[in-house]
Structure formats: structure tokens, C-alpha cells
Image (cartoon, rainbow, N blue to C red; front, side, top):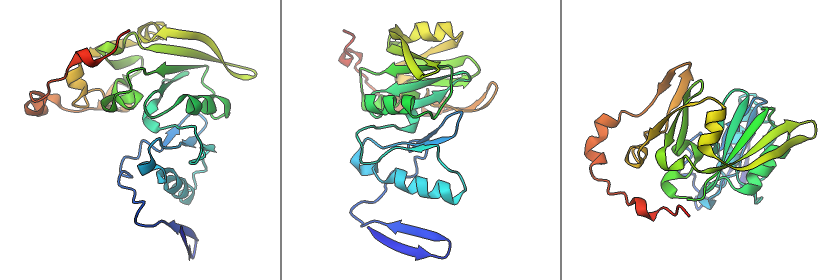
Length: 232
């Protein structure tokens, strides 16, 4: 690592052997809870040092993170696995965010949602690497969900005086959403592969999504084999 002093701070540079090819994907390195920004820890070595850069930039913007994960630690947390929903939040535990990362987030006093739902992804497919690739909130109590995710198991945590305590285990995702009175639109896998679930919510009933009709020629090329899923 090479350190360069400048007038208003310090810049750290790394050797070219560790370039940050994916730094343009800026929703992955951090999450924003009701208490502030949490800088996570990337699960792949190629993206390991992105959080170090993001932490530096945030402080240059006078944004002090409420917590920063240790990039050398075993706990992994990526931004695509966190979705707030008002008085509750969803955390995906799967290919990128691991169990240790979920536990760290729950016990670091970095959020105050009354309920946190830990959505446990058993498939761990690269094309559904994050929670927001198969589940997306597009409005108040309105969401998109890939149709083979309705039975995905969810652990329910309630905020008590001593912190978050697990109240239920392995509740079907559809049951959780029903309790929270979500209106759900089920999405086919071929639409998901075209990023049809990924949506940017701008406000009540207003979001930016992908125009699937413009990608019909791409959609026709997919020959997704649903039998590869293990439903056991």
C-alpha cells in the first residue's frame, strides 16, 4: 500500500494487481438503516477493498458511518441484501451476505426496526446473488417476488430491551409478507433474468424499473432449466 499526503487528507493507493473493476456498482458496499450508513464487507476477494474506498469517500462527504465491518473478518454484508420497509427490514442471507454478517448487523446496535426478517437463501445461484434480485419493494406494502421464492425460509427477529431476539424460525416468505399486508406480484424466472425484479423506489407508488418489452429478443434466448432447483 502506498500513502500519499494531500492538503486536506490522506489518499491510499494500491498496486495495480488489486484494481477495483466493480466499483461502479455502488449499492453493494454499504447499506442505510434508520440509524445511518453501515459499510459492509465484500464476499469476493476481487471486491474486497471497495469498502475501504467507500469509507474514505463517505468521510470526505462528512458522512460518518455508524459502523464499518472489518474487511479482513469472516462476517460479510453486501448492500443488495438489505431492504428497509418502514417499521421492519429484510436481510438476505445467502451467496454474498453470510450468517456471520447477519448476526453482526443484528448485534451492533446500528438499526432500530421493530422487526427484522432474515431471508435465508438455500439456492445460492449467481443470478440471484442478492435479496434484491428476487424480491423488490416497489411501494408501500407492494412488492415483486420470483415465484419459486414463496416458500423460502425466514427467521423473525424482534427488537427487545437487550437487542434483537429471534422470535420465530423458518417461516415461509409468503407468510411473512402476508402478515405485513404486502400486495405481491409474482414474477417468472425468465423475467428475473432480465432484471425484472430490480427496481429503484422513488416514493409512494413511483419507481424506476426495466422495460422488459424492449428486451424480448434477449429474453427469447434464455433456456432456463427450472429442474436445477433443489426444492427438497
